Length: 68
Image 1: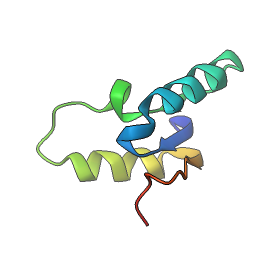
Image 2 (image 1 turned 180 degrees about the vertical axis):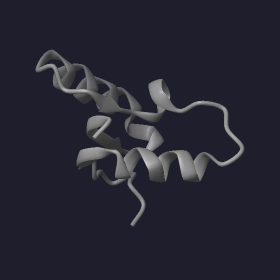
Image 3 (image 1 turned 135 degrees about the vertical axis):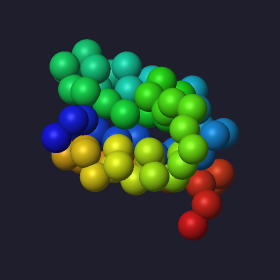
């Protein structure tokens, strides 16, 4: 696995997601967050799919702003 944790969140919750990323990295976990790992690509959806498949864990931040 390339990543320990993939973090999924609503854009409104970006600050919270970044804080979770920092906290997880303090425990030496390798995280994937689109604001720091997403690159310009022809197929962003495929990049995200690949990152999910390359992660051991998925953290989903559910808030009132998250879409179902």
